[in-house]
Length: 208
Figure 1: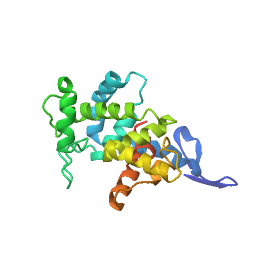
Figure 2 (figure 1 turned 60 degrees about the horizontal axis):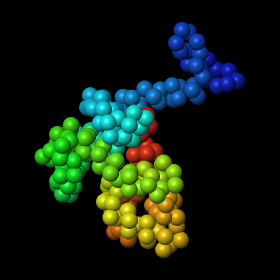
Figure 3 (figure 1 turned 30 degrees about the vertical axis):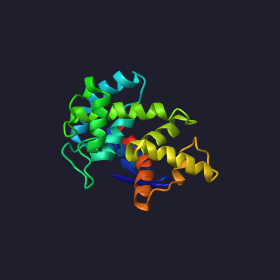
């Protein structure tokens, strides 16, 4: 049922009350976003929460990690990239081997296609990267450096900071500074710079 008046079209909502048409997108957006969350994400969320609390503490926002997995694999357990990255967290074979040796008690023999292994490894690798990004001026900047490191390797983050400083940017800020400077090839640069933004400003909204 619709009504036309000075405020524009309105649609009859719950309990017979009229809802301004302009508010309908705001009401429906959370429902649409919720529907976009994969079934496996809902199923594995308790495991993500458990691992994050154990490694990061009870106050850490789990949405960062849920969004990161969404970006990496879309919550597809058996996916493998052209470059050879595998599983939910898209670990390359060399990285999977390294992190398994770094945390043998928690990860044992690496198995990126096992969602439980992948989540444990991602949470721990993120923490390893987070500790090395201590220089960042703000938390969101720290996550920018962290995610760039996860996507392209921490050595590239170190190089990018040095190069950004040479170009007059603040090497302790990611957004608008280090993210604009790198000697990576054009394809790698674009992928790496899109990665933190997609996770922090797009997918995190689904899981907050």
